[in-house]
Image 1 (cartoon, rainbow over the protein chains, first blue to last red):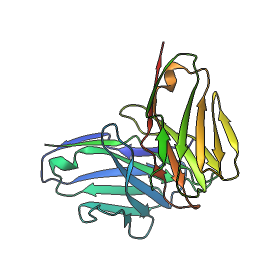
Image 2 (cartoon, rainbow over the protein chains, first blue to last red):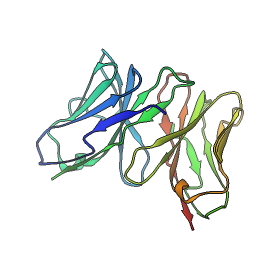
Image 3 (cartoon, one colour):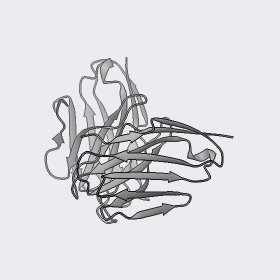
Length: 117
Length: 110
């Protein structure tokens, strides 16, 4: 299957700092990428849909000023957690929709485990 | 609306079979199946488009009953590597967001 790269895999930061997470589609161009948040033993919760060249679409209850998304190219989307606090600690996963395959398959990055002290 | 998966958890011995179900209250365009191991990203298994098709992937196959808006994932002669949490993701229209179920935790013991 297609490859989606996500960095960093783990980050520990102090409360109040900002953290940037990158998501890259390595072997296809993705006009649409997605950002999810996952708590332990729970499902994937969609935070926002990232569209290349336009503003991201945020799900209800997700603060767009807190979670900044930029999709500047067809292969890169970034999520910046601004002024992170301990309650933002979670597993963040990105996915990219492959436009070339059958159906609208999403391929996931390896995830970023964020710990805010 | 989130699809409902059943069972929530299943424990197997190596070589046994299992079925995981995914039901939606809405008409579906497609159903996607993923497997996630602890601390890792979900891995795509297969996609089923409306039309009631059945697909196979090694010893893992799936069906999609469009009338009932249900999909089932079949794991035959399970292997240790099959352990993980299985998620179904449903799409109500082509290009719409995927909505994931709560997941089914599958454990395969020797």
